[in-house]
Length: 430
Image (cartoon, rainbow, N blue to C red; front, side, top):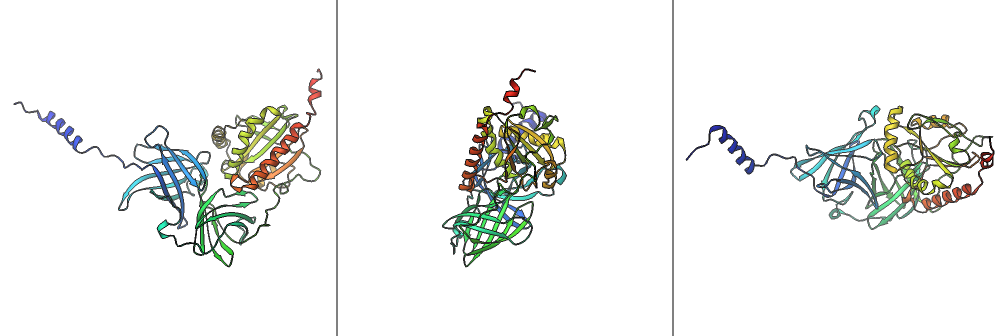
């Protein structure tokens, strides 16, 4: 019998060891529902998500908020870590699987990718698999001592948020969902619970997460809204069917004697863009003042982009003027190219400057004050401003959204039916 040489013996031993003890591989996350928990100023802020198709070509992370679902492409790295860029927001979720006494869990961070902040707004989080509840394990549910179902007038107790709010809440047993609305927009869909005389709500769909918590006493509520990477606002509230926010059609208006606005901003290619350009002459023009960092701007774009695709042959144009988190044209190009492609935007996009309402007011000469991002300006075929709408109320606001959509469509139908005052001039030979 011929024995192997030392070199071949080593090779054979390596093969046998490889078969008996497979090479170390980083632990993999499980598909399905997860419960995450941010740490915001030492306070837990829960959120829910789902991981799907981890073995496929297009793995997906889905953030869950009540009936709302937001999907993000998931990158699985060779070291076992995960990364999901928050679509059009300049942020990402990054995590890796960690083995612990309680089993595998995810540990990671919400990364704020805005260069000038240099990660100052990062939030740590942990997540556990198979937990679909948000605030309270069903086995520890103590029941609700009050019913918060209905419409609430919310009054801010400090100046960290400028305007009062309206809350629309739905309660079934201890499950609580709803939305808080302000003059600048809404919180998107909140999900949470009522436990005894306390209530909890949270939301996370890509931009900064939100936590609302409070107490209930004799039919009134008080608490705080934690805006994650931004600030905390204390509030108190009472039920009211009559409460309304200030009229969003009257907050921003033209100064006395003004009928028009004009501007000149660079587009994505750096070319100057102005309302006086021939492209807009005799057209109805919708001007959107937005920012990719702004969730209500994103929701407004999600409404306007498909509307424009369906109506662009009717004599309408649109311009999105973006004010961004960096005072940099290159940053604008990167962010708004991604924004354009994600929403399939087929109208013009221009760079207004850094995100600042005072700056936006200065650059849109003729406006009294740019009160919020987004702001929508509708201009008729003659070039006159016919309507200015502050903020945006998304689908979660129910009747408010339906009323906005109906008024928007009615106004655009009316303006598009008007004759082009320049059509006869275009027919005259030069």
